[in-house]
Image 1: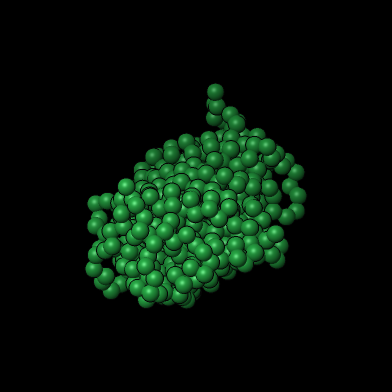
Image 2: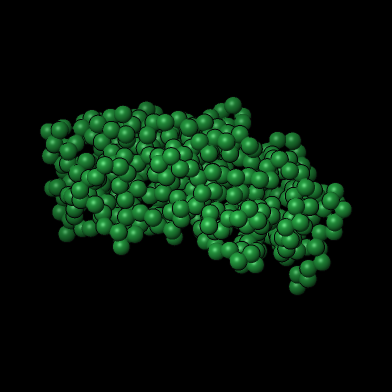
Length: 221
Length: 221
C-alpha cells in the first residue's frame, strides 16, 4: 500500500486533505506540530481527527525562541481588520520547517508523498502557501535526500491549493470529514473568536457553500 | 552592523565558518541543535566556541522519532569502513531541517545571511552538502519568506564548500580557531574513536596540512 505523510493541524483544510489522501488510496501517517502556537488547542483536535480516520500520528515539539509572529507571541494582537500585505500572524519560515520534518519522516518511513492542505485562494497571503513555493520545494526535496538520488522522489501534494473555501467545504462534506471536530481559530480560546482571519475565511466559505458550520452547534462547556 | 545566523555544531568546519563570518564583519548569532544525536557531546563544544568568540547562541531542541540514521539510533553501528554511496550516518533531510530553522531565525532577527560549514570535497557524500542543493535552497528561501517578497534576501553562504579538509585546517589556524576545543567524532564517547568517517576525514586533513591535531593533546579525564 502506498504511503503518505499528512501535515495535520486539526483545521478544516488539513483535515479535508487527510480524508482526500485516504480516498486516493494512501496509508496516511499524520504529522502534528506543537511549536508554541497560541492556538495550542488545535493539537487535540488534530489528534482526534487522526484517530477518527484510523491514521497513525507523530507529534513534533519545538520552540521558536525568536517568535516574530502574533501566533507565537501573546504580546502581539491578532488583527481583526484585514489590511493589505502579509499579516502579523505569518510565522517566519513555518511551512519550510513543517515540510522539512515531513520530508525527513517520508524518507525514513518510505512514503511516496507528503500531503499538505495549503491554499492560495481564500488565504491570508502567506508567501509559503503559493504554488511556486511548493514547486521549488519539490526540486529541493529531490536534491536533499538519499531517496532522491536513487531516482525515486517524494512528491509534495497540495490538492486544495487552487480551491476556494466554499469548494473545500463542499469537498469535505462529500468526504464525510467531521467538520464539527475541526478547529480554525487563531486565538484558541474556549470558543472561536469569529474575528480573526482564519475564522472569517471559514465563515465566508460556509456562507457561500450555504451550509451551517457544524462547529457552531458544539457545546464547548 | 550586518548580521548572520551561523549553524554551529562544535566541529572543525562550523567553528571555522563562525570565525570566518566574524572576520567578514558580521555580528554572528549561532544556532545549535539538540536533536537526539548520539554525539550530543558536540553541543557543549558548540556552546563553548560560541562563548569564546563572543557570539550569542540559541539552542533548538527536537526529536526525530522515526530516526532512520546511525547518528540517531544506537542499535545501528557507525561504519568503520567507508563503502561507496551514502553512509548510514546520513540523517533524512537533516540539513533541510537545520536550514529552515536558520531561515526563520534570520527573518525574525533581520539577518542578511546564514553561514553553514557544509563541504563537498572531504565529506561523507551526503546529498544535502552539495552546491546544487544550496543553490536551490536560496531560491526557496526567497519564495518562502515575507522578507523575500520585499526584494530583500537572506543568502545562505557556504564558504568552505569547495575546500579540502587540509585547506579548511590551514584557514582555521590563520583565523585562530581554537581547534583543540572542536569536536568531530560521530560517536561522542570520552575520546574521539578515530575510526568513524568524521574522525578519518579530520585526521587526513591534519596529516596533509602537516599539523598535529591539538585535540589529541587535550586531557579528557
